[in-house]
Image (cartoon, rainbow, N blue to C red; front, side):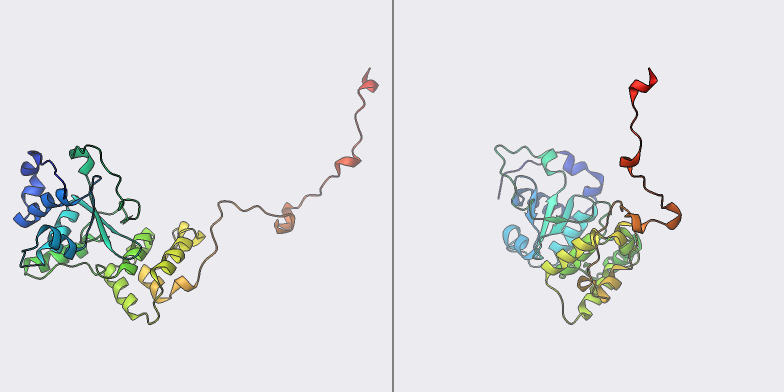
Length: 260
């Protein structure tokens, strides 16, 4: 735990002020919990044990994390082994730390795609999905991310092309993943996703719904790496493009003395 500073602007921020009391309390508590660059381990149980050891309702913590992530206060991610991590987005902007220590979490954390707005416990691509979640919250249901307990799916979703996410959803991805009988390790998935990310197909924007990618177990079907340009050999050229090559050794040599 570390000593941190709370600026007066925190209390007058319109969005923050509109959040539940416990969510605002967690936002402050995470300042003490985070390292000197604003990174922290985002396990709900670890946060509860460190910051709220006497809390009776354990569901308050994941709900508050979701709310802080949705409003942009937090950025969430995970490690290769599936452990959750987080970052307080404007931590270094608002906190002055004497002799700060380099974050050990920052180097290992896989951050979710920043091009998407976070609408759930991680980044959801569809606002309609969040609207449905909001209705459930209003009716007292617990808000949860379909991929929260599926680190392999979190990795797949974070690496999938935008078109693959648009043609799919986190719910579909989770459902298809659970149907796979022989699941690959997260290391195998990471290597396969790196190969697909570098493939010509994904680079050109051709990708099925990412849940279909899982259904087809495409980690066992690695593509060839994309090439930025292709050099054609003489035999690859179109017949109409073939030109007779000239043997330079047969050309006459110009003699400058003959022009005098």
